[in-house]
Length: 150
Length: 338
Image 1 (spheres, rainbow over the protein chains, first blue to last red):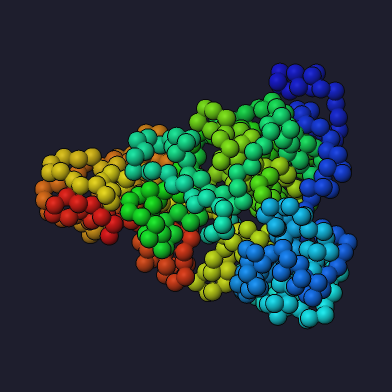
Image 2: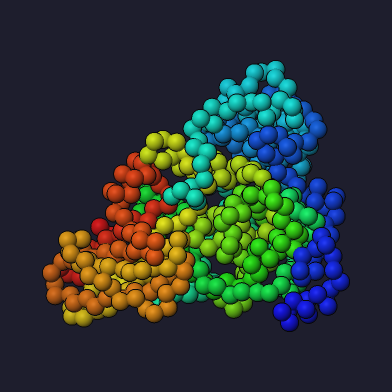
């Protein structure tokens, strides 16, 4: 009780702030700059687009020095195509000497999907089409949370 | 393993005398380097399904009411099938586990500061390493989770996530994101690469199990262990037991390869989701032995044989291996893995 009173006295009431009044409001631009998550429904995908052909050239220039000529994904291990975009954007290339623009990430995603027979050679991959790509891996996964049911 | 990424540093478990792993001997596994973060500039952003997005400095986090808890942390690849090629001894077969005293702020307190929306069911936790490593954690599982800034009485070390890391006690090591910079509350998981293409494995029906977080009950005899040579007469058998589901209830040991089991002595310091130290008297007469330990946790779960585990979880089982390990003592006292 005493503790609660002290906290209440130390910090004027703020209906949208927790009991300790710690931290600062997050600047929306700072959040947007870090908010890289792309969910399977496509939320988080930026503007831009790319094709497998565009991606082949970027892959040769930027990725092949580590990954070789082409990259075969383990076909059962990628349930959602959105994860490819998410991971390429957040992690590649490791040295970041030339960060990829959104359309380059779309193009690389398209190239990998084409190399794995998931899209056609001339398909345009963007925020509208990427979530529509059905991955063969989806049926390999059991969409069940094992933390609840060991 | 990508070029430039150091191989894991393994805890020398056979040399560990008590339940606490020294900070410098804590196993280390990283995915995209160890970032050098300025503790004055680093921020943790909490956003998504919250009433008010907030940003916290390390100093802010250290002002919250704090806790210190002793918990093990185990990589899902500890004792992975095939790991015997890495080297001889408990460090190689079981060295991807440590147990430390962790100091920090309960995660829920930080989230409640921003106000948890009723629609939030998961959090996506992201690190500031080279790959912005991220994992989805169920909100229902964070009751004892900590945003950690201290380890064994000192600040976290860089390779352990300085200035702040996540600890969800009992969860596989890779879910405990290091160098935390962002926590987003969400309605569902994000299905990041590290929780789909990585850190998953097929179950017995061939279906790939997602979000297989909990490290189950396990134990290992650290003395005597492979590489040792027993001398005749009395020696004290020693080891550690742990469970991601709670406290250790008992440990049994065998010296005849599992024909007969007798209770080991548990040290009184039995904590939930922590190492528990056990001992047992052993007399070596020159007759060969097959020694092993078998732990049971407070939920009643018993450490299985490898055959039973493979039968339950599929022939391709590689990760989350908590099977009984047997050490053979030859007539000359030489100890080897069975």
